[in-house]
Length: 408
Image 1 (cartoon, helix red, strand yellow):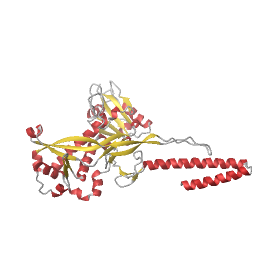
Image 2 (cartoon, one colour):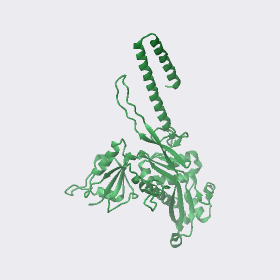
Image 3 (cartoon, rainbow, N blue to C red):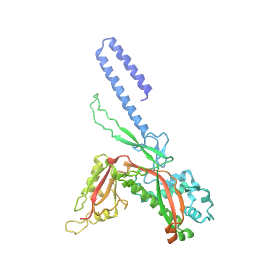
Image 4 (cartoon, helix red, strand yellow):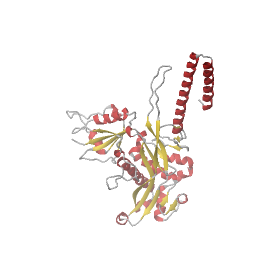
């Protein structure tokens, strides 16, 4: 309903109501007054829905399809959200098909040796500064795709938002709408869906990788070696900081790193059964997220926790126990960024991937570092890589930590 149509109809009903008053027709006036109130309520509800829809507008998936969801908040320019099955490299290649042929190994060899033979395209597509060498977007995308495969959160399907600038605001649902049935003609209980903004702010993440001189000189598998080193370093820094934050040495946490999930007092918590571990704690963690209208699809654990649950047997020790269906349906991801604590017990994380968002700028900077101990003693070349990224919780109530997981 357009505002002009609403105004026109409201004015028509008011004129009729005034005529009924002048004619002393109280019954007609009461009916018209009720119609006016119903029309106003209908338009107000429509306006509220349109406002929320506009707040959710602006994001697209990698295929250009509009996305409406709790991640989208008040952005005037369309943004892209990369889901678990989207390739960042494909997204970049759609803009720059020439970049598909570029080779990271040739760039690294050229940087290390100064020899750019058969690597003219690579040489022409890099840019250098005092802080390092910016590799082409498509090669950055390849590294980021590899890092996503290794990251607990990205591989779980946490949305990735390419950040063209330093900050991107995404939406957070503060209050869920409440629906109810109502009698015909009766007033409905007001329910407002309240949205808030969460700002993803670019933070600098550093990583180091070492490549042997032999690998540099041969260059046959240099691209694969570099991809593994850099993507592993990025995945590690994302997961570790997003899980625990970065301690500042004074009992707090660095504000220039992502805030740790385990430091957020609003997430759900369940204690594992001790001294004998069973599946009850995991079931309760899943249930807690569901009770808050979340859709928990992922169970993140470390390798020791995986071993503990895999070794569960029946009372007689005759056979291994099968996990209940509720747990088998979860996407189990093993990540040793979840620290094993044999004394207090490890933590696991059950969560809805849509309760979080990760923002990344799609340019990586690489710098050759000479004179390191590894380089002198072992013949390795140190390469520093840094990226700009951030990670935030949008719905902490859709995340549950399971604490105290340890052997009897």
